[in-house]
Length: 316
Ligand SMILES: [Zn+2]
Image (cartoon, rainbow, N blue to C red; front, side, top):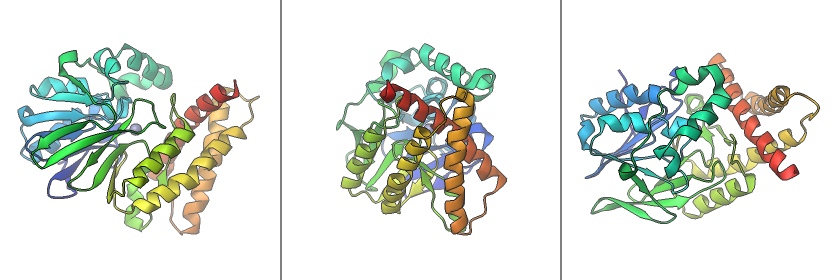
């Protein structure tokens, strides 16, 4: 049974079992007059979301808003499929992402290019969202969920240009998607917080990422709700680590051997970052489980692709 995690009186976290993994990607449920979900993950995760909502005794017809922080498939890929079962819901998206949800042809082509034969298992189906079911929110626009709660949308590029973060005044928390990294919350049980940047293709920009981080920092939030995975209330440590790791990521990519094949460049960069992360954990006497090893390699390889993509653009 997929029991949602209670984060506060009104915010729950449903595990989407992205890639079949526990604690990988989450959907947040905000219980206000207008029931609101943040992130849908990819279509294979929709049954997990529905199960979590059942557990919270929320009817699918009571869901009013499905907000996606950005349109990468592990955040919004399942929006069209979920919407089929939520007849009264609207999908809220960044203005730069809206057309790709309405017509996912490019999303599908992009994912097929990266994931090849794994596309069907990981993402299928990616269904369009009808235009009259889409709401676009520009920077600083709000969405009222109840007389006492209006969410504010804040442009936070860096991971992607079509990325916003969502500020919730009641919790004084912010839903940051992938803007300021990934929280490896499985390590939290061992008493360590690891936050790494997510630099995946093809709009990664380190300057914008740091600007977005500074903007979020200036808001003095009490909690950060990550796309992957869960909530951290140790916000200063989040800012510190992303600022610490991001230059390591970029430098590892700058030092790549460009005479290697693209595939081998990706492996070289991700391995170089991995070694740093592993020694960081080793210093703290934290063992790396097989699961964590796998997920770090997966994430770092995708990040390496984005780093190469970024450097190729700036080196031109
Ligand atoms: Zn993501």
